[in-house]
Length: 154
Image 1: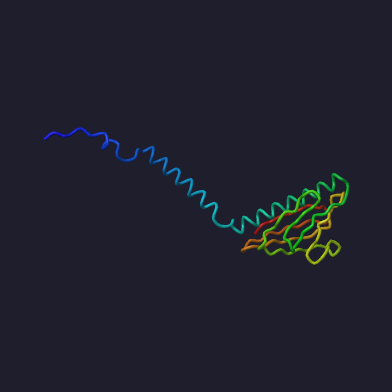
Image 2: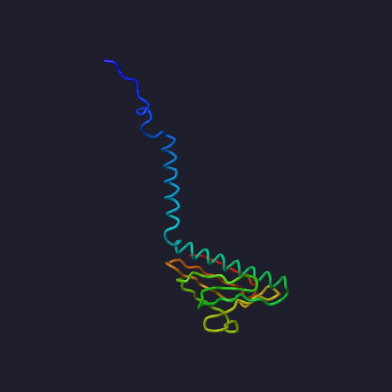
């Protein structure tokens, strides 16, 4: 019995290793992209992001008040859950977060709005703000004497 030489169609049946690796790589990219599209970021990530944005805005407003030699204020809007100042556009805070604000009575603009004022000397009106979401809590404190901003996430 003699063996027949392979025909052209039987030698070509199946996939090469390179074709299989390319297909697996494409599937991996699609699966990775799909996991990023589904769901919201974790509460910790959302609180950290909001805290960093707010701390940077407070520091930037203080620096501009010193440089421009004028009083500037960063306004917190609890109803809209956002903050803004002359140096920072309105920036949202997490909508589902609990926000507690403690500032002097002079800086309360209404029940839902309050300011952190910064003076040309570097000082401020002072105050504290807490952002809480899903067991994660951030505390932002502005020192009235120095205007320094301290931010901590727990």
